[in-house]
Amino acid sequence: MSIIKENNKFIYTKSDYTDILANKDFHMPGWIWAHSTIFRAFELIENKLNSWNPKSVGEISTVVKAIRNVFEFLHQHHHHEDELVFPILKDQSEDIKNLLVKLDEQHVEWDRLQGEVNDIINSLLSIKSVQDQIEDVDRIIRELCLKFSETRHCVVSHFLDEEQTLLPIVVTIPKNKQNDIANHIQTQSRKDRLFKFSVCLINDAAQHDKAVENSFNSEVPWLIRKLVVGLWKKSEYNWFLKALEV
Image (cartoon, rainbow, N blue to C red; front, side, top):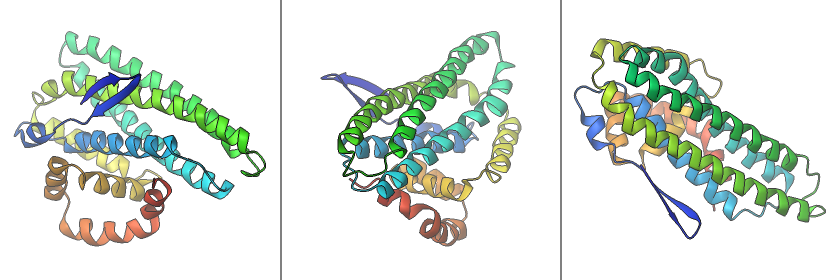
């Protein structure tokens, strides 16, 4: 990933995951899938917010739901890192412990920004009539755009730091230990409230990233990708894409 600032705006470029996903010593592809997925989801949301003029409180409610679902997906990703990945990495060396201090601090920063975004969202949800309160709606959306932009920068910066510092270390961890972590995360993920939505979110992101798509297709059986996810998309996901259409 890269971040460039031009004319007071950040321009984000997603990582090319071809090499790491093809690395024979890397056995935690779900970690990369999550990064690619969150990168795309945050891009969709920011594009929506920057051009958004809601016409009804129902539309506001649906877009807020989309944002909160992505936030919950990211929260679960961080939870899995904090509980399952980082503790094992800390055992590798003292140098890694120092690196993880910074990453832990970034998780705390994300929690703070998420709370601030949610406060703004709650103000938006308090709107009773878009037509009668249009000035309030416009003001709140401007605040939301600014805070979400700050949040996206925090998240992408965190991913960039993780990928540059941790991935070279992860590939030195024995295959069986990496597989244990990955299997435990999969077990926990299946219990998540938004499991079906999350699988659809990953599947969608994979269609916009060739390296992730190849990895996803090799790890997930055809029956699940084409039939099960196809059914889930109708009930759990298509509304999300429609809500974030620009």
